[in-house]
Image (cartoon, rainbow over all chains, first blue to last red; front, side):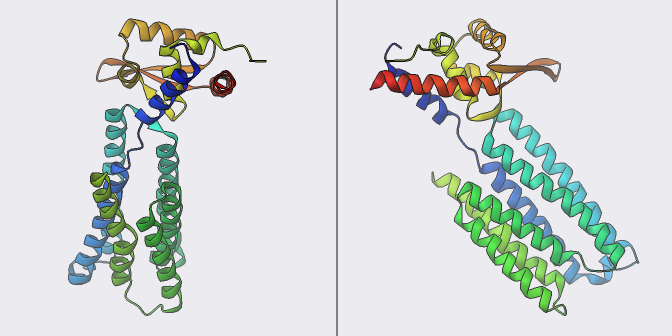
Length: 190
Length: 93
């Protein structure tokens, strides 16, 4: 390796060998999209079970997502160890969704203390996280999903009589589940 | 006039290490060994040299009772890599 051309080629080869792996991100989107849509459907179809007691609904919407968060953290740690490196892009995305999770956990008790439904605030926060992620990774379905969810959040703020479980199902499907599946499929097309 | 080249990065293994670390926030020994295609001993020596010159940080931990080495580039390492790249570009001209 004596010439500058060879050195430039080597640098280029090394940088390209450290690939951006967006599959774990798509798995996270599918998992969370599926979980929230599934939980909303169960709550919508069987309200008599979920709202059986004063706290059953709160427990349902707190315990399962917290278990989901723990599972996601373990999945991401395991995945990071398997790959052997973390790119700057992966780190930025990890920080965005880490902050989103903390904010989400804060919004729920604050909203409950104020006596308001936390769904619109969570969906708005989710739409901003999706928009940022879509812009950073330059993936249009996530960007569009985030935009649709943001418009949807604006709409529900002026139509408070709308069923929030249906809002969750439509909003999260458009914002997370469908873009997540699209991202997962697109990785296999590469 | 061409600038003097950084001798530390002139070594292909060390250049491979820095080029990999420039794109990552952290990278483990196993992956570096794979991309540099070098032996465990040689890679350890080159990492030590980069660490001694404050180009990289090395963190050692244990995973399932096995030692694990994680590397990351320092601010000095980034600056030196940029300077090296600019220098080889001037050589190319």
